[in-house]
Amino acid sequence: MTTVPVFSVIVPTYRRPERLAACLRALAALDYPSDRFEVIVVDDGGGATTDGAPAGLDVTLLSQPHAGPAAARNTGAARARGEYLAFTDDDCAPDAGWLRALAEHASPGADQLIGGYTVNALADNPYSAATQLLLDYLYEWQAGHADEDGFFASNNLAAPTALFRARGGFDTGFPLAAGEDRELCYRWVRSGGRLVYAPRAVVRHAHHLTLRSFWRQHVNYGRGARRFHLRRTGDLSAGRSPTFYTNLVTCPLTRVRGSRRLTLTALLALTQLATATGYWRERLRE
Image 1 (cartoon, helix red, strand yellow):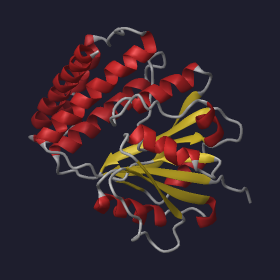
Image 2 (image 1 turned 30 degrees about the vertical axis):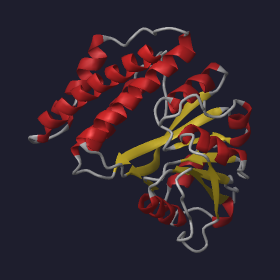
Image 3 (image 1 turned 45 degrees about the vertical axis):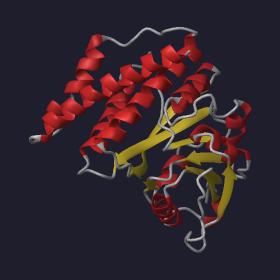
Image 4 (image 1 turned 135 degrees about the vertical axis):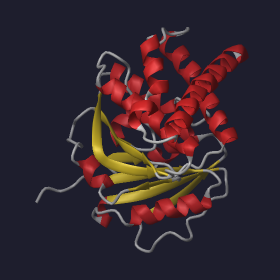
């Protein structure tokens, strides 16, 4: 029998105790040998506790002053014992087969980042649904455009521990949950690695959004995009084609049934306005 790799699952958390508890329950239910993975929760200055973690789950709680998820993930990675790091977030619940699906792509000595598939767990929330639809569109676009810069979201991402550390981990110059995953993937590929998609490695993302938090999230994405572009080129990068944005905004018209198509189309248009706002706001701060 082939021995499966040892994983260190890194979970940054900040003031979401109920979500964190649900995440830990999902991790305790993984269909993976319990002696072949550990869980490292990194409290990003929010007073988190793992006192209610399920019995039998190998979980360690680390704490740091509030510095953002990129720094929290690096804190966890520095203490990891596993051969591979598997990153998810406190508002995510990995499916039982998550680690096994990642392990299928974890080849010894392979220089790769492995990204899984994320599902919106709040189907009735239009803001959460629109955000997930945007991510799905981006993943599908990059699958058909090998010459474009690809990325995997950091809530469902795995990497060889030694290579992650050697490349400096996440860039802590991204203090928000926006752009740090894109920058890591870009730097990884530029230094000789590759991106490998593992669609059977599923996590369910339960990020409840209101109109206000939806707008703020996508403004932050724009701020992260500006930081990414500066690190990549030192200046403004060339944008994508108008067709890319037209297809993005209108994709609900062909993918969604019923009256919700128009709502999601409007919300995707709003994401682009918010992203542009954040991008230029960040530029003015420079």
